[in-house]
Image 1 (tube, rainbow, N blue to C red):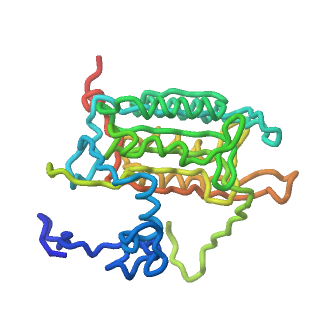
Image 2: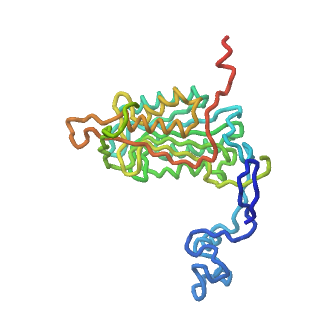
Image 3: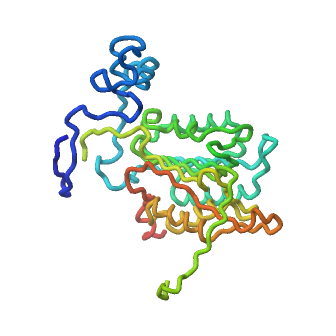
Length: 335
């Protein structure tokens, strides 16, 4: 590595050699002796002794790795995402109320969630499309259509799924599926016009059947009173954000008249601060609302009574994301 200094005075390592290795067993083994398949374990040829099992599988199935490229939507070291495109982008809402799976009950209150979310996303300048009770085949068709659109003039894309779920799976009307079946369509190599742009997923669904009883916080007596333009590569999975209503393994709560705790909180924060706060700060306050302001009220079912919930945010964002006003003068000029 060579060391150089950037404009802010921070020392940066620049790659100047080939000493980078993957952490997979035996991948890219050094000198033919460090690979997983070495000596008498060669699979096909002498060159295989210099490759691990993963590398051999990739070469056997796919040949040479492709060299993807896409249009750069913002400068290399920009602090914030470029949200000055012509359009904000698509927002797809998959709203599941009724199911064909016998064990799944109807989700009363989900239409309130859907209507509230559509309303606040329109206020943030999204082009909102809602789908009701899709079977998996139709859901995937809608996702494929969205991924095949030209997003060159869009800031980002957003997908919200309101449904039943369990650990690792979400339900369509007729069957379960994994979330990666959805977001894979929008990775940089599959959807180049969204490369380098935010891809946001909001999932209102259970991730299991565990309960969170919470813990009571009490004030202790000892406490005091008072309250660049050059081309560059990015990972194909960069710039995703996935916000789950609950953590893996746990229930997600929904009020049958007011909607789910997570969507109520998300819509409130988006309406109040959607164009002021960056998305991670905003989601922190969403988590605070869910964690502090909500508690289950099911006295007839004691084991489900007074339970809590905390959302789970997975971020691969590489810049600050703020839904700045598409028409900054709109707040000043009135016709």
